[in-house]
Amino acid sequence: MAGENLTHAEFDRGLAACRPAMYRFACTLVGLDDADDVVQEASERAWKKWAQFDPGRGSLRPWLFAILADRVRRRRRRRTPPILTTLPPGILTLPDMDPTAIDLSRTVEQLPPRQRSAIVLFYYLDLPIAEIASIMDCAEGTVKSSLHDARAALARSLGGAYADQC
Amino acid sequence: MPTSVEDLLRDAGAQWRASIDAMPQRSAAAPWWRRRWVIFAATAACLAALIVPIYRSAELAPIRGQLGSGAGADCAAPQLSIAGVAPHAVPTLHPGEEITVKGYAYVSGCHEYQHDPASTPITVTIALKGRDDQRDLKTVRSIGSAGRFTTKVRVPQDFAPGPATLHAGPHWPHSTVQVTIAERGAS
Image 1 (cartoon, each protein chain N blue to C red):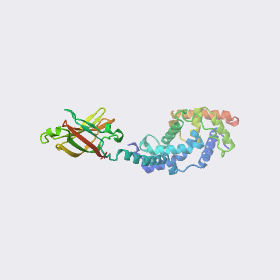
Image 2 (tube, rainbow over the protein chains, first blue to last red):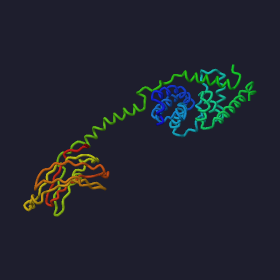
Image 3 (cartoon, each protein chain N blue to C red):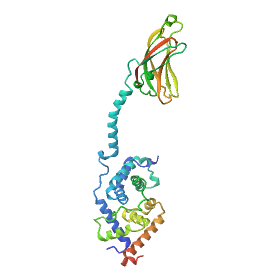
Image 4 (cartoon, helix red, strand yellow):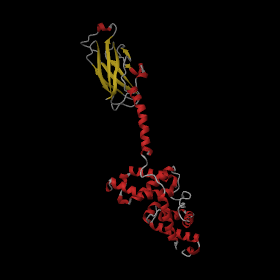
C-alpha cells in the first residue's frame, strides 16, 4: 500500500507545513478572495486520498499542488486553460510591496505564459526547479531556459543598467 | 538596492510571499459547521428523520383484515390475487422479506358432501407471481375439509424484480380459501 510509508500524524504535519505554500499557489490561480476556499477543498480532498500518496514517487508538496490545481479546474467546470496561463488580476502587485517590486511584478505579468509561469513558480512561490518541472509538465532544462529567457526579457523591459545584463 | 534582475526578482518574490503570508487566513480547518460534509450529513439526517417513519408505516406495518377470497371452479384451482383485490393496500414485496399468511380454507357448496377429507385433504399453495418469475413458496397441508392455517413464507432473494402479487390457491377444486397477510417485514 502506497500510503504505508507515511503515518497519519506525519501526513497531518506535512499538510500543515505545506498550507502556506498551498495558499500562495492558490492565490496565483484564483486570486485572494477564493484562495482560502480552494485550499480548504484541496486539504479535505488530500485527506480522502491520503492512502494514495506514495513518498517514493516525490515529495508531498507537488502532490498537494496537483490536487489543488485539480480543485481549481473543477471549480471552473473544466473550462480553464492550462495552469498559470492566466493570473488573477493584480495578484502579483500587493499593496504592501514597495514601488520597485510592484513595477517589476507588473512587468512579470506581461511576460509570455510559459516564462511568466516559470518566474512566478520559482521566485514568487519559491519552488525548486524539479517541482516546477513537475507542475509545468516539462523537463528541468526547459524550466531553466524559460527562466533565463524571462530574466532577459525583464532586463530589456526595465532598461537602463539592467538592459546591459541581457 | 538590488543590482541585477535576479536580485530584483528574489526581492519582489520575498516581498510578495511576506504580503501573502501576512494576510488573514482561515484556520487550518474550516469551522465544523462550514464543512460541506457536515451540512450534507445534517440535511440527510433531517430528511431521513422525516421520510423513514412515513416509509416504515407504509411498507412494514401489518396489513390486517380480509383482503380477498377465491372460489374453486371445476377442475381448476382458483388463485387468489391479493393485489388484485386491494391493489392500493399491498405494497411492494422485498426480496428476503418474511410474510405471515393467515387463512381459512373450506370445501364449498354441495361438494362438501362428496368430499372425503381423509383421502383428499385441502392443501393450499402460497405462490408469488411476478411479471417474469413465478415461485411456489409453500404448500400448507393438514387443513382437512375446513380449517384455519397460519404459515410464514419468505420472498426469494433471487426473485426477478418488478411488481409481484401473492397468491393462495387451494388444490381441491371445489374449495375456497380466504387469506390475510397478518404480518410482514424484512426479518
